[in-house]
Amino acid sequence: MKLRTDGVTWQDVDGELVILDMESSVYLTTNVSGALLAKSLREDRTMADLVSALSAEYGIDAMIAERDAQAFVQRLREKKLLLED
Image 1 (cartoon, rainbow, N blue to C red):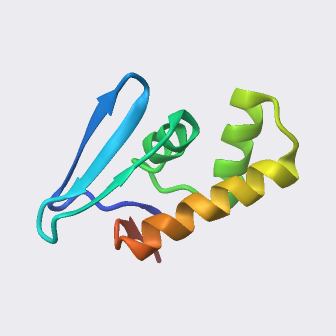
Image 2: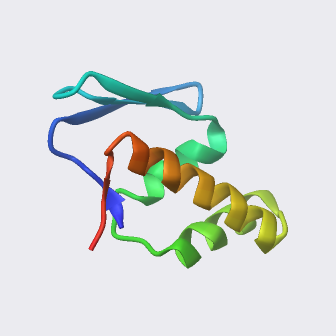
Image 3: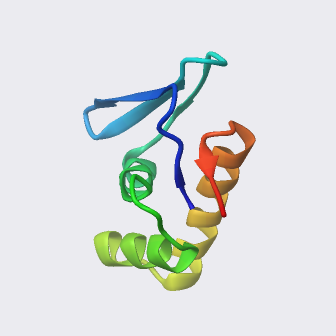
């Protein structure tokens, strides 16, 4: 899975992101951990990749990282900002 790039732009504001789908005028704001995940998703990544990134960056338990990564990916799906195989 990875972030859509067609018609999508983002702005980094103090480590957080505002992601805007210019075609549908839908936007998503992230906190710093969401920004880490979104930036990771510029490339094709698995859920395990995202969990590892959160665990490594913030030193959190893998179960917590997985819960947070799944919640973030779900928000991207709801906003139609994610490309999946």
